[in-house]
Length: 109
Image (cartoon, rainbow, N blue to C red; front, top):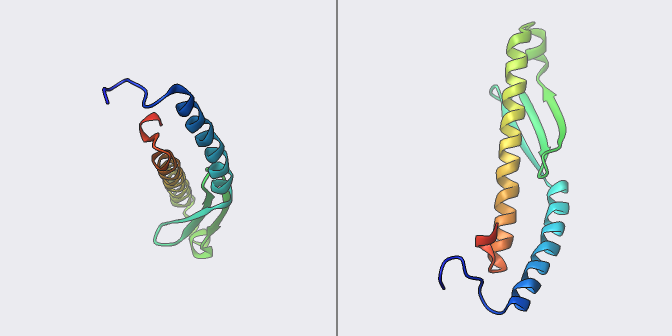
């Protein structure tokens, strides 16, 4: 197949796209329920984030707070949250791209 050309008949392609859209909605709903757990600072901070990049919880080791090092706590929080967002985005992209690949439309996303 030449690059830039649509495969098969246009009606079939439209049906595939419609099925993909429906499956993407379902997948996004599932991602909102799935969680990833990310730690930073050797486990001193734990962030739980959903597959649609919503923070569910942040746990901080009390020893980190009692140390009084506010700057270190802030740095670790930023690092943990950024890492959680990146992992969640990667996870979601993998799920959505896999869905498109299963439907034979991997090149469209």
